[in-house]
Length: 306
Image 1 (cartoon, rainbow, N blue to C red):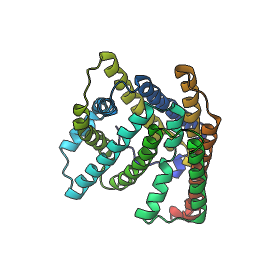
Image 2 (cartoon, rainbow, N blue to C red):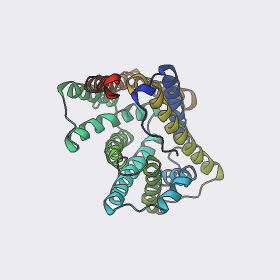
Image 3 (cartoon, one colour):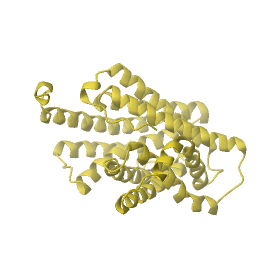
Image 4 (tube, helix red, strand yellow):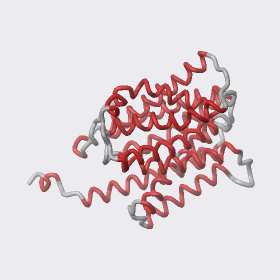
């Protein structure tokens, strides 16, 4: 992967391109979801997630060579290990959930990741927690309760697994934010792939089952779709502000519901769609609000060129 630096505000003036790139992002990640759901629970979650990340080595091979030549201090290696552990745990839980509950449910609950990041950033990184942000978090939690509807519908182990996955993904993202200030982005992504594979290896070997070449190829396709999705997301953020592209992410829930109905005969649950809309609405509001605050705090262009 390239080590493209973060785009400047001046370069984020192509909203149509940003929306189209984010649309491609949602379709790519939906492809990952559909394949994992299609493979189902016949293959243990540890084994399928291990094979998926082993395929990922193909896409990060150049950066792995760069890592071999790098000399990072011990604390950076410790953060790499921590991020890998958190990510591996989240991935394992996500694969378990995706094989057992409707695609739309997994996708909708997954939108809680940024909420975990927001709360974690306030508690662990001292990023502050204004009342508007707290209100948005409350709306997102309400959305999650609407999706799960405990006491009204059965909350399956897959739902609990995805809730835990959202937590671990969020904490892993906070560690990743710290790592991006200490190592190139390509190295951070490559080390995540390497560490997750190593963490998953013993669990995969403990439950290993024979598999066909077709299953291996399908898992390779998930790695390709995931890589494409991250690339498209990067292009979207470079083309337009997150406040513009973030609402488009809600379409992934729509694609998930449609795919579940078309390919797996899953009923489209309007409550899941509504709950997911509340969560993504809360995230979009937080994103827009933070963009407004940054714009106020940043000097105008003529002043910065003095």
